[in-house]
Length: 197
Image (cartoon, rainbow, N blue to C red; front, side, top):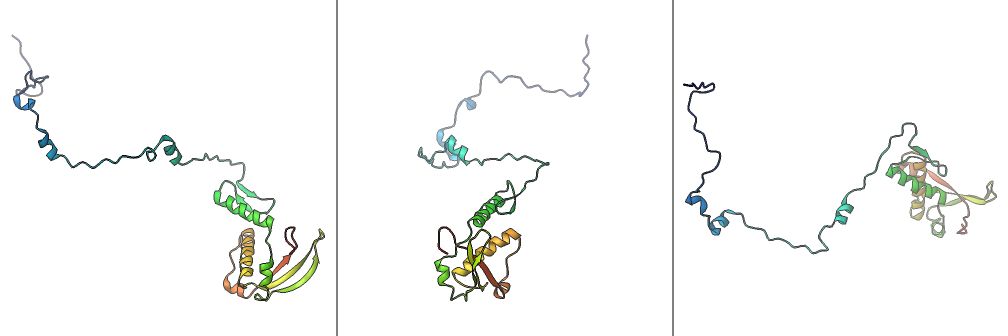
C-alpha cells in the first residue's frame, strides 16, 4: 500500500484536458451569416487611388531626408578667421557668418559707385565739394564731397549702405536718427575704370 503526501493543498483539483475534445459542438461549427458580422463593423472609407506620378518613390523619400554634416573638434586650431582682403573676422563653418563675410568682402573690394543719379540729386541734399584734384600715392586723383547725413533720396540709400559696411567692419551699432541729423558725411570719390566719375 502506498501513501500520497500532499504538500500544497489538501483540496482536490480538477484538471483540464491538454487537447480539445475530438468532436466540436454544433454551435461552434455553424458560422454567423455575413449580414450579422457587417452590422458590428465600422463603415469603410473609400480608398483613394494615386497616380503613378504622385506615388512616393525611393528616390523622393531619399531626397526628403536632410543631409547631415559631420562635425570635428580641433582644439589646437581656432575657427575664427580674419580675411586678408577685407580684414573682417568671422567664424569658419558658421553659415550665417560665412554669408555675411562673403557679402561684406565683395562690397569692400568692389566699392560703391557714385553715378549720374547721385549727381542729379546733389542740389536737394545740399552737397558741397570740399576739394577736387586730391592726389593719392598711386597717382590717381579724386575729390572730397560733404553732405548732411540725414539726406533723402538716392544719396541717403548710398550713405546707409556705406554706414552698414563700416558698422560691420567695426562691429558697432547703427547710428540713431538724432545722431544722423546732427552729423555730416564726407566721401572721397575716385574715378573708376567703368565710369567717368
